[in-house]
Length: 489
Image 1 (cartoon, one colour):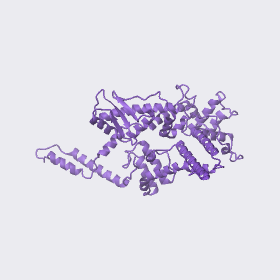
Image 2 (image 1 turned 90 degrees about the vertical axis):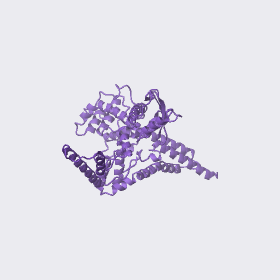
Image 3 (image 1 turned 45 degrees about the vertical axis):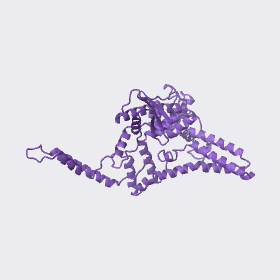
Image 4 (image 1 turned 180 degrees about the vertical axis):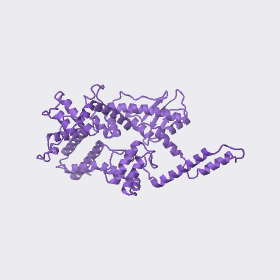
């Protein structure tokens, strides 16, 4: 994706109006022309063509690139992230439906959150749901409280909401469903692209699609080389190569080149019995984004906040009630259970390294300082990369007065009727560009979960990757200190 500088909107609007008025005048003149009379001047086809070409001077004819963009917008391979989001939305809808009646009732109270607490946490309240088990009350408290905020962190491991749905969804099962949906959509897109480009394959044709790291799709195993080249040209449009590459990273067995077979007019089906190993699940998390945390395997609706001191900064405050503590604990639970678990695992890693290097770093301060610097460095690099990626667009946005600059950004990414609307980008790309350019203009914080801006440095870096890099930096630092201490070169 390239966030390019757009033309001045007022000039572009004037240009569009001029061309539209000219077209309307020409159309009106054509419609009001009298039927050909005996003595009218007859214009030859050649002269008519010349006149039409002359009238079109100054207009912008669609280029081959424009045609390709339009085609790629209509026939595009699905991305795993999009399909995973749809699967998650479906599971979330299941939870919303389960708690719909209770949620509607909660909204009839002046303080819905307090009513939810009374129902599930306050045995002294007449609204307390003693008919439910403690576990069911714990789940209902977290899920109904989250629904008040839009249901942004609904946890999918709720045994009550999915009791009649054939089992709890997991990160692995959701990923396999998303992969299957991706494969079916990509298969259909290939049929459409072949038909659009007039490519007819024999009924027994078979070949293999592979993808390079630069997202270029290749056709191998087809005897007709010209036809193979035509297929490659038809498929290598827009983000098709990238989306196929990411999909195959999750569905191709380890050790094999990223590829999928095509035979009998269709792609090979996804192996729905595939066991997703840790490496593949890490890739799922990377592609899915923060939404993967909603499939937490460590979520516990009974868990209190990690640090009680967070909830008791002022013991005498009237706001420091049991209800406020429970509400804070719920926010911690639904916010990032997997991240909490990973944080604890990283703490254990650091304790081991510190204990193993007491001879060169007695109090562990050097190890901790090294770790923090190395852990933060990828975020620093990512922020610089993102700022550079949007630098040209930001300079353009900043050339307008502040409010007009915000409107300019909106016209590019949120106003389909605007003359500068970026229809060449996917909706996800426009949403990200809108968010990032507004942040740069207003001074707000950039999000580091920007796969488009960070593609040049390997994509969004996960917390686990940052941790591994920081641990390696600590080990290298400890070895350096040990070599200095014992005079080892």
